[in-house]
Each structure stands twice: as C-alpha cells, then as structure tokens.
Length: 375
Image 1: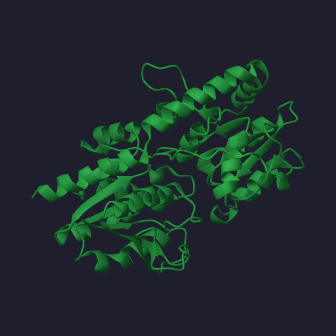
Image 2: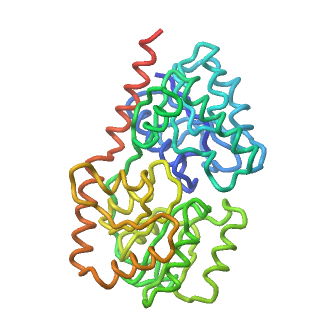
Image 3: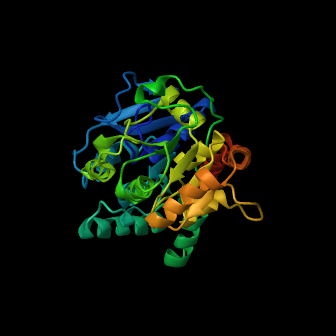
C-alpha cells in the first residue's frame, strides 16, 4: 500500500511527543513490511538530514510558527500532495482532522487516529477550543475509519457522536535496562529519585506534583524531565513553585540512553495528568519495571487496573496535592521495597504482553485493508 501520515512534527529520534512516537513506531514497521510510507513533517522540527528514515520517506514542508496555526497550516499545505498517489491518507490528532474531508472527496481512503480530546487542553482559549471541538466532530464523521487509542475515547465517541470507532492503543518496545552513569551529571543516584517524564504542559498536572513533593519529608530527589521550549511560560511557573528546593531537578528532555537510565533507576514514576489519550510515558515506565503512581483519570486507570486483575500501579485523586502527598509518603515509607518491586514487575509483564507495537501495526494495517475493500 501507498500510505501517507500527516498531522505531526516528524518521526526521527529527538522529535518529542506522543503522536510523533506513535507515528514513528507504526511507519517504520509498515515500511519494513514492504509498504510505501510517506510521513509529512514540519521542516522546522524534522532535522533528519536524509530523505528517508529507517525506510520511511520524509516529506518536509513549512508551517506557520504559531501555537494556534502551526498544525493546521502544515496540514493545509500537505493537501495538494495527498490528493493523488496514495491508497491511504492517515491523519493524526483532531486538529489536523479538520481537513480530513479533502482527500476523502478526492477519492482517497482516509483514516484518523484520535490521540486525545485536544479541545480540553489548558493551553487553548475559547475560540481555539471551539475549533478543536469541530475537529473532533470531523474525526468522527469525515474519514472512512476513526481509530482511538483508549477505550475511554471509544466510549466518548459512541456517546457523543454515535459513531463506531476502532480501538488500537499505543505501545512499547522491550526496553534496555541501563545502570546509572550519564545521569550522574545531575547529581542522581540509583533508586534515590522520583521521575516524571513527558511534555511540560499544564494538563500533565506537574504543578500538583511539585506542590505535593515539597511537603514530603524525604531526601529523595524529584526529576521532572521534558522540553521547556515547547511549553510557553509553564516551565517558569513550575520552577517558581519549586522555589529553592534543591531536591527538584529539571534536566530537560531525555532521549536514548539517558531515558533508559532514568526509567531503569527511578524509585517511582509519577504521572499526575489531568488529561491523557493513552499515556506512552506510563507504558514505558511500566515496561522497565518501574513502579508507578498515577492520577485516577480513566485513561490512566484503564492501563493500571486491567479487568479482573490486581492493580498494576498506585493512584490518587486527580488534581489533589494533599492526596498526592499522602500517596507519595505511603509509597516511599509504608510499602516495603519488595512490594514496590513486585508491583513494578507485574506491570512490566502486563504491558509487554498487551501493548506490543508489532501487533498494533498489524491491527492498523487491517483497518487500511478493510477501508480499501469497501466502496
């Protein structure tokens, strides 16, 4: 099949974001299976010097560098290129899906993957949120197939739009455990820090984590890893909340061996999110056997409380800093180390079995094949 991906920054290593990671894992596997895959990238973000990345063709186009206009301007510029020459045009995220009707009218088969309800994100004002609501509507009504990354999203689309969707989650790769070495430059020691890793944006709830941690009686450190360049003034707000607490470390984004080390040696991974689609960072932490503490939003509980099984992580009421403080204190002082280790090991076994990128790729290709067989 000839497949086009659009709606993302890029796919090469160093381009951060859950959507980018999702598209990378799918596209390189599809290319390895013999499909012609083109990923339309934003030229500012995608710095891979060659035309192909691991068998995937990179088509770099410009975009308006603006919080409100970057994604939609780039997606609009992609449209003339995807109107012919592709069997499947696959949009990622609800904002870009505003234009999913264009290749559909030209006779292309169109899929949209919904990675979350973007209109709920704190960074959007009233008008932008309204436009993203329209994007969610188009993601339900305009493509040949709508894919959602969580069961919670599938239920939302059923209730709100009365439309069927296909649930295909995010995934993880078997990780490489690494002893702590490179991260000692931040003053870290094995098992002597808590970790939160992801985008530094308000919906990740990191302000709640900082407030909860500051009231914690511990010599452990808190590592908040993420790229401050993508987050407006929110990182400065976090640093102001951290104040002069020397235990709180902001190392910036972590990739490759640095990320392996971070997950392999953390005492606890904490995800205090207020909004998620399917949290890849949580799946990654669990794949390393790192015990996790998460907010009790449905998208997190869906991962850590599988039907009919014991919980695979600890949780706390979303947005409640005092409750998070108590949960952290319990995890660090009341639970025996071997109980935390057992929790992490059960989580590792579960996610490696249930969230496999190879299977996810096959399921996505099956969606394409079903679209192509239909009129």
